[in-house]
Length: 319
Image (cartoon, rainbow, N blue to C red; front, side, top):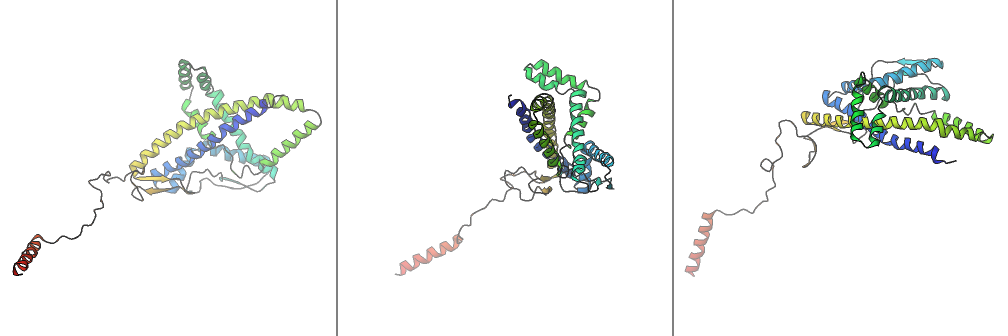
């Protein structure tokens, strides 16, 4: 039994998940930042940000609402508008569910992620056939790559499905609250696996892990790789848009702290800074800069110097 057959797909999935999580976080931050630069108002920027990821938000809340009903968990409150916030972080609090035991809470919190993962896989493979692009790239032939890319644009409603794929995939990472009971479920799965190994059905487990599980992980990794490539394109577009808005508005978003905010381009601007110059202000130049000029000692008037010289001569002649 080669253990790498089982571990390899999990490692590949982990390797692609790390940059995907960072890319998603960057996209969320700067999507909110663009909304704030456009409006300079937190409430409107929050609305713009939530509309940008509306498919993922609706899917998450609707699935949780349905699953809570199936498991007989009461809904405490439903609100239609997001709360005003300072940064780009989706807060899934439109449907507030009453407290439940850990098992039911884990199911309610985890089901939206599983449904979103299924939709992402279905859209990327069955509808858009995006897996043909990496397969064409693997051949190393430019004609096949070009043909695969052109084939995507022939898909009916291509841009709609591409947006749905982007929005759902970048809103599917479970929140801290949704992951609260996952360790319990993973522990139960681990105990069942150990019991099967003890009673002598290890070959069945091995065949399952090396067969269907490995194949499923490979498909998921392929889908996430495609999504990461899509995120890279969106990051470029968001970055160009944000930079243009910063230069036009004369303000720059600051993501260094726990809360995003805008800073005036004139505040704390240092030479060589990438902070945009406010509209109407002159470009830095030696001709409009206040250069430090050293202080020279006072020099007496030339007439006074001549009088002092004449007096000195008179004194010498008198002597």
